[in-house]
Image (cartoon, rainbow, N blue to C red):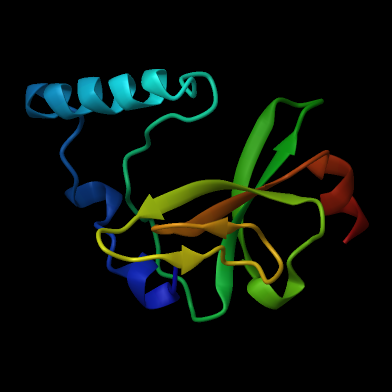
Length: 127
């Protein structure tokens, strides 16, 4: 996902919370995940942004397991860490996009927006 596409997501202050009009869609998404045996692998998230990104930037989630703290920070795509695992995608109608990282698996109709570092408390400290 380009920064321009990310920046086009609605701001968190402008989004309505989950409501009854969403229930049927959520039920159908659950049914599709269940049909494919993926209920415990994938979930649903509310697409939003808190701030804008510049071109070439990505969001990376860090976890400090000792202190039970998670943070999301901006990093340069060019500085992508080899231990990063893509964990969030935006599905787009009628498109097929490769994963945002060079060499990553091809993800049909999706754009990566968040990566999570495996064992990332030590990875973060090492950078």
